[in-house]
Image (tube, rainbow, N blue to C red; front, side):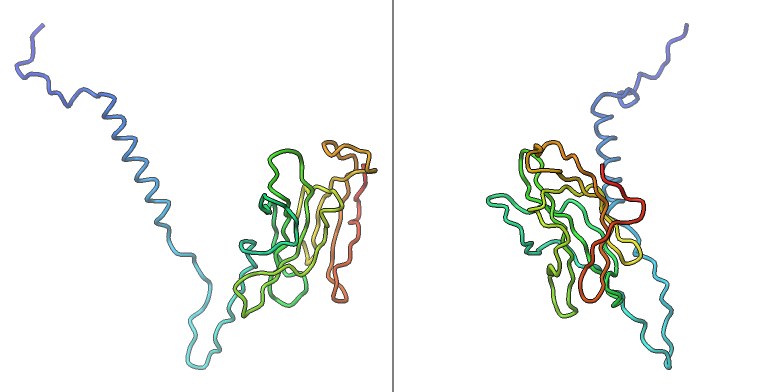
Length: 192
């Protein structure tokens, strides 16, 4: 066997530092690509001289900075679910938020609040309470469909049922009517 006349080059052998450098560079490229995203596409047409300005869309109220009417003591109120949609037919979306105290143990009861935001306001405000935390319920699903709030609630048949083990499952539907939210049970809903 004939030996090569050229000595082996040091950079032709991979060492762990090479793999670390490659992984770091790849992670940097991925992180940078997640920051550099194209702008959202819009379907707005450019207005000509005689065209009226396109209507601006209104964003749904955010849950940050909202003063929820929930007594949590030393812990914070935590938004665990939310849904948005136009509930009162005014063309502006509302936000429905499921909120409970951020307790380190146990299952704190949920509250369900409807938030709205005025055109001249910077923060949303609570305008309705659909589920009071005193009801000791847990909200497992939340959706807005056709202007109605739909939720699945877990609760207790009596005060003697331990908090760990809700024994009642209920479906609820709230619809805006006559300047208030009316609660009903959707068709096909059953208690367990």
